[in-house]
Length: 311
View 1 (cartoon, rainbow, N blue to C red):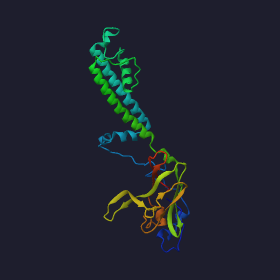
View 2: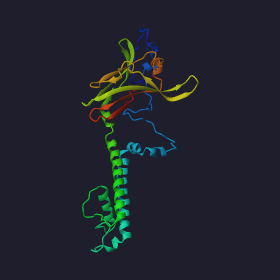
View 3: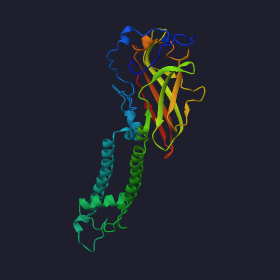
View 4: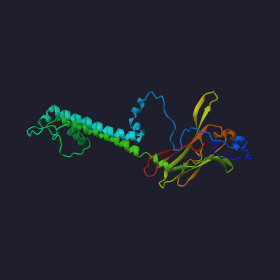
């Protein structure tokens, strides 16, 4: 936060924390190169966390729908194509086996022979009939006859399973397309977060705005301080999350985001910054994560956007 937070020195405010009562160290006055800090949440809102050493990977398969939605687009499209192609090939093979076992392939062109599927003369035509059946195209050139009970049963099975596959894969693609992640691209946070006196109180402030004309409904904002902590018992908690009050008790965290708004956090005795001096502020390894939630007006879909202001 040494590059992005402005904290003026105020010495005559009796109720201000000690970070405004201490002088800036000489090395901070003279400046210096900024430290490269690895962020917990990147500026685009993506969490910079990778799960490793996960042994119970079968848990991902128990919620296969969410797993598919969370995949990247190229993998999602590959699975989409592979699922449909596999089912068409599988049922096409069964249609060909039925025709082969019944002897339909040996009586091609025999007008006295009633086949299971008319005009099915090989695996390619069986594959095309499988596609027509599952997609309910029905060109009319290949059709099942009433002299083939096993074919009627297979037709029912493929129709039902095809409907399930369509509901699952089309639903997955719809959820993937309708995710409001791109909507968050038009939610803009201020480049810098500042610490300054406002209405006689020392406050941490940043600005947020919406670039679109379609508003965010029921917008609310939260802030978290990500900082390692050691308890009184000596337990070390890495990346401990502490709430930063941005108006929860007064209702100021509920936003009417029509124009850019300044979000303010008062640094009082309940603030996690109360015991941090100005000298410590430049040395502390911590990060502030701001989370904006709301409903997209156009689609009524919930939206979640997170941002890590400079700090």
